[in-house]
Image (cartoon, rainbow, N blue to C red; front, side):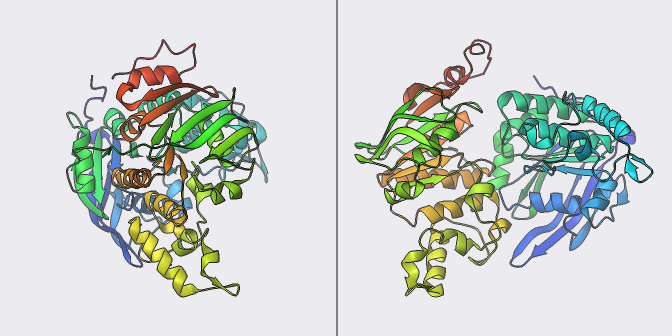
Length: 514
């Protein structure tokens, strides 16, 4: 059933227009003559691969960047703001993946940061609390306004951001990958909230790589590719994923996963009775040579904690063996020397050095190979980084580009390029495709298949069940800190696996279409 609301009367709505928008960075045309209109009262999706221009457009809208060409118009008037503060005062709110909140300040202080009710030269604490409660009521968040934001869950912090936007009568609210760190239930709450704040006098922009979400909650959509406008759908009624994905990548996608059969050998990774924080019982698992094993579970199931324990990044008991050789407990260096690599879930906080170059990030683990008398050879470093970035198709003007300037998908490929410089027996990949586009995901899948074909044992953690079912040879299901099932690829069923992952008291309540 289509739950989208009827079309809105044009006389009562506020429209957002982008006209001939252009932005040039050194070596990159981020936006090139982009023009489209978003109607007030709609939830409008911005679709495109990483590097398509979505983030640049949002940053121009929010005053982080100033456009080199073109203009933004709201309600028929040209937007003249040049800073985020000016944009915020004009009713523009962008809720990024990395939320712009101050953890050590209270909920109330964050909502009214820079706009607190005053009593002379002092903040009026009574009024601040009253106004904060009123703002939290608007989004249905029941927390004490005096609570420090750092003590809230990610979903609660996101609701604080929305409360902040609504309290300032935001005319445009943009969401950037809002469900990437949310559980299924938290995502459902967010969708209800987005529908609630949708008004004729307000535009809601929604950026996501999850096509199912877009088709479910968005009324309209614009697709960008390589900084250019490709198509705008004024209505998504009757549209399918392919209508969005094919314009994004410029080709038809017959198979999202590209799964390849391969020869499976003997046991490479043998985890025996491993216990660490986040687990409710000792973990036992084996992965064979050339095998890709998926690990699926809901948020808080203990997947990331188990990977950290296996790698030795978290304190553990039990044993981890690679090709029959036991690893040192709690020692990542020993794991790496034994041929184990680990790509963490949060690549921006734990995987990259954002202010260093792509070359520095790729060469992080192999620099000793290029040292001569304690001196690093710049020529060899550059050649190695260029070779690895070409091998993994990292899109960057040069290896001297700052890592933070790369898209999420290219950052992930650069992290993999770092590890693939080493001899590998086991690859632990925690959410390797989170927050990246369809095309980059397919490239990550290809890298995993190539590793497996070389005899590497791959452990693939993902919150996207269709991805786990599409990429992996078998699936380990985790629930509440325990591995509860081991399902072969040919026996995998979406509903059955999800029910296995749900807490026991909820397992019979789910209604998931196969």
